[in-house]
Length: 188
Image (tube, rainbow, N blue to C red):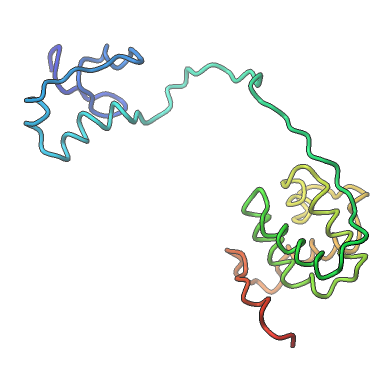
């Protein structure tokens, strides 16, 4: 369309020539009369949007060196032998719901709802260790779904219960965490 004007490029419509798009940080100057002559949607679509948002991947970004990644070691898991059972159940319920990934939030919160109140103190300690000692939540998920073998130190009856629960033999719809109202219902 000439040297100036609207240009349709790969990322959308931009003001200026193709050369203008290739210069990062270049400020575009547009006269007030040119802006005012555009309808509101056209202004956003043709002038503001392409400058603010460039869609698509150009494919020429440099490889990530990883030098800016900071690994923060997690504190080692410690058993809490003096914690009252009801406090432990409440803490494990909370920790089952607040994971680092949605898949485990759903899986572990539903498992906790169904099993925590029936678990013995020893089973609660095993579950505590299972959900808090591994530093990677994906490991727990892969062990529960049998995508990876469970390490010997986590192979116990609680892990077997979690694996069986993850099979979802009742074919329940498990799309979200359970509501917490069940905590306030009288025991059956």
